[in-house]
Length: 246
Length: 246
Image 1 (cartoon, each protein chain N blue to C red):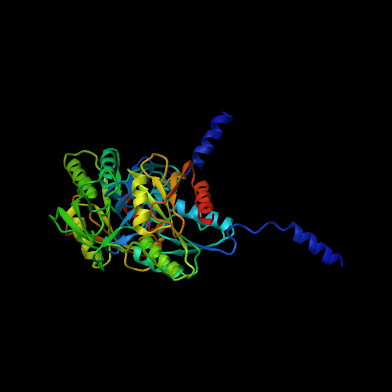
Image 2 (cartoon, each protein chain N blue to C red):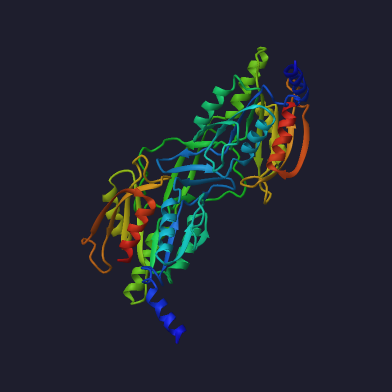
């Protein structure tokens, strides 16, 4: 009887369930590396910090978090399931495998748009006197657009499908590009940020952004926007997740 | 009198001077990054570990160490003066400024052979329907060959000049490429290592190498060689420095 009473007391003391409890959130983060040969690659300045902040916050909100990560120098946040990839094609494979059981998919990785058309098996030797070189690049798949397309198709069929969130990192006309990207790629939400501001964005611990979203099923001309002033990436991550879970 | 006696005792107790005491050793390390636009770059898999091991060992041997480093995720070894650079052109500038007061110059950086001919001021936008892209690359300066040339010229004029040590990281025909590189670039010594061996070379903590050298003033057909079996990079660094200081 005492034990039963104690148990009731403890039950009353239990906190409300966390807002993302029971949800699976898949996040891509970091750059991709596109090999030219065994030693050379094409990449970009993404540090992975924004995606890792999202993973950390999503786990803190109670979600099961799957983090698909390009090569970065960051520790895995506690409680997060991390899948390491290098190239855009590898990231696409991991992302598509994660689509079916995710309720939220956030494409935060800076995926290389292009990759070398051919990967040399051995290190390319420069030739004496060779002063120029042409690298032939081909388009990488647009991972987030593919995920959004599959998500929309599942939704249209009445199947469960993740809310799809993308990022637009630009150095000019940020909002215009972001709205266009949201519509063209059929995303549910996009995080528009200006990476040309010193101290913000790539490599930095802070970020400023505008969230642009539409409610699933709403027309593309009914966009909502919310500006978020410069803040630590972890705070921006929280704001993005709160909006995505609203 | 007691103080004088004590001083004599202490003098007797002093260790022999360190083998590199009074010498300045300049070392380049890590990859270079060659910008395509504000976010994209071309780079390579150099972790910087070998160059940093050399810097650490050179400092331990008593040298003044100047470490010209591309972007890596490594702490600066104690007592080492580190100069951070990104591109090959920046690394060349720092290397040439260091030539005059160095007794040993070790080019361990994996300098990008080519850089984009033009750097876009704003992030390149991919165009809808654009499935291919050509990147026009131009040859970067050969930093170590330039340093070796200037060093040989100084030596010929009776001026002090550094011993110049290069690296050859190859995936095949390692020794053949290394001997050719030593001769063609007029280096005093080259460290030939096979980066195709799993667990050795790029990104690894271990390395195996063959040192190839000629004595300053000796003909190119009088090459000496010393194979060093797989060992921690710090041990290889010590072997390279012992050979360079011999």
